[in-house]
Amino acid sequence: MREELCTDCDSDNVTRIEKNKKAQLILLMDNHFRCKDHALDFLDLREKMLKNSTNLPTSITEQRMLDEVRVMKAKFK
Image (cartoon, rainbow, N blue to C red; front, side, top):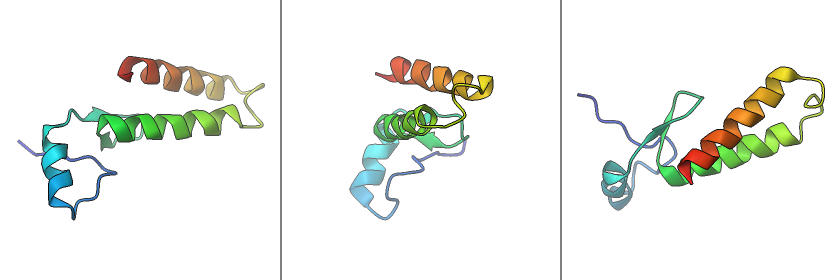
């Protein structure tokens, strides 16, 4: 079994790795595993990017992506 670590955690910090091994990892839409804190940061950033998109009013795809991000944030909180 391959051991996964959070993509965004600092791999050089031993205490962070130990904490990370105990943390539940979440696989997000970009196919990277993240701990809950980093997953929420990633989703916040993605939501902000989509909300400020100039194509949002006309793009069904971006509207669906924004809805997906909001649903995922609600699940993790």
